Length: 201
Image (tube, rainbow, N blue to C red):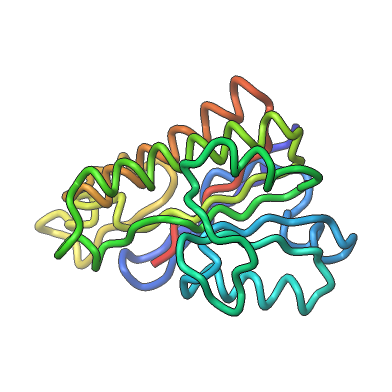
């Protein structure tokens, strides 16, 4: 399995960088070009909806899952529901995992909700993907995982970020997204699942 050079040296907070790329062919292109059955979790959110629209427009066979109904979601359910994920994953070749509780929800959701969805949910989706012999798994993370690592040294105008920077998350959202990245790395190392993690801003 090849590892692509996927690090983009960026000034913190300006634009996102693709990280932890471990797939032989970019999954988005592969899914669209071949009409692969593709699962998008979090399809009622902004990023998930955009993925569904883009993939369908390019000819992919998209299955979409979210806990909230929308015109872009055809299965309503929770990503931590193992039985549901087992059924949903049947025939799926590529997974885009965008389901998560996000930073703005820190204001009104308990920490346990972030653990349940962002960590347990991610592990559940990974387990189902491995069991179904999925070809590629893409997870959307966040630059929030960097946390205090984004604070520049006193003599520098900005912090320079690449894959070598150790995240220092400042809140439960950042902690759960960093942990989800670790789960993807475990699935890649231990189960051979081709994983891509994208830290988006």
